[in-house]
Length: 152
Length: 105
Image (cartoon, rainbow over all chains, first blue to last red; front, top):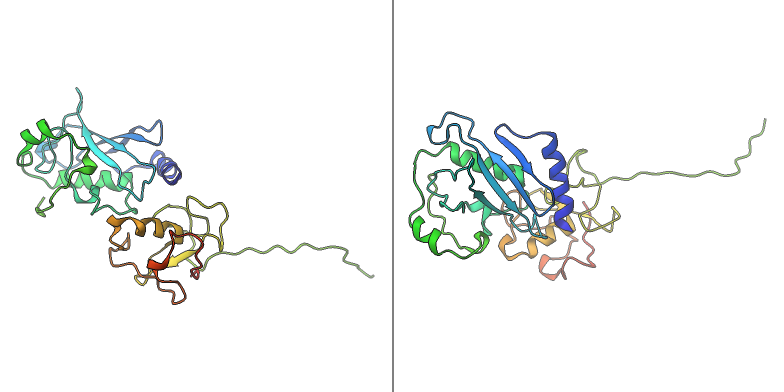
């Protein structure tokens, strides 16, 4: 109930206007949305690529953070980043329970991820990526990430 | 000429004493409107001003502060959220944000 009103509000705003490099792909219901993001500047790591984000909202959104992951298909790779696992799971404090605030929204999350990519120079995966991708069964929201790196 | 008023209807409008176009950061509804759960604006769905000068619908900010992960911080500035109004009951004594009588700003 909380979520649907706020999400319909966000949706009509997104239909109206979006920041450059961010587009709304699918929001057929108020549970799961797809957004595309593109890095605007000339960062060679992300040239000519478009990344697809999946947002999953709980009934308590925005009191609870949405679950946000990159999804991979033929046209959309998972962006290189030392905080993005190759299965699309993102380690970002604002998406974590401790870092989320209900004043964030879909647009602000997209903008944060866009700028997280823009400022990155490392073509790297997080340490332990291979094992994490192989063995992790937890949903992104249940993983307790340790945020130790403020550099990227 | 003598005019006799047989009937008249008074109409009044009210609004919270807040900036015109501002919305509650949590539900994104205007302050003069209600939180996502209430139907009627006004005393039933008041605003709460924090010591940090950020305000929200009382029901919205209580939903947030009840979450353990909020650490009782303001969603805007992450300072500990304390009600600025002296008459407002202490947060700990709020039974789930219901039946409370915080003073509107």
